[in-house]
Image (cartoon, rainbow, N blue to C red):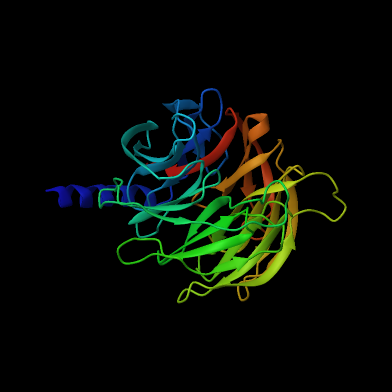
Length: 375
């Protein structure tokens, strides 16, 4: 009976998302006072936002991720615990996409502190969390119904690099899982690595190779191309994007190109934040905090290398997050310091961004997850 219920849930969820409905449900991590998960509807054809309401009050999360097959949202949470105790956790919520209601299904400690980023494997069998304020990366196995297993696996990061304040120790910052769910890649801002951890058949993280970025680059987030051959690292401290060729057999990374996100004549302070690849695999977007723009690049379909298209102003300060709806029609910039989400349409031929004139207010937005609403 349990297996039948799971299969029915999967079938219903897949039918509701397969059409990639124009109407989306957004879940937004907010670092307001108090921190929360906010929600609203979003029309991916017009870029119009619905009324913003609170889905979960008083929960501190900076990043969230969606199960690939089930209506479950996972949040990387920093719990309120006495100073010095491990505060890292993952919370799981069942989604009602029509109403925006989130029902908590459970939680698990990650055995570390300062959770930063989370991603769910494409096979739905595990998720991975990294810890900027801690020491490593944690794998959390998932049960067939999407619930969290407590049989976690951890790998500690090591090393430092050139920046005298921000690279005195490891700072794992962003997770990307390979298309075949066999490797977890983690951008570490502190040691200038992209670590590659193989995943064993028992869903354990294993020690693996790493890519060494330029000294002081500060890899922040990583994102795979849909073909799984190329991994893109946005480097926070030197405002660049690196194109990495990924060997899916050995887990090795080879640098192909590194390109600036800023214009040559910009001399003010800037740090990059988010990197996303368009569902078509034709474009890449990276956000600049300081220049307050989204850098747009076209992706060469043979080499994976980038060519510059434009830098579109985000129309707000500190775009900590940029995200695109599942159809690839719209991009939203979460401008943290101006408490706003701003919608842009994506030109499907060039990748250029065009302001829709639509925006909404959310206190200190940190991350957005898109969930298609069944029509």
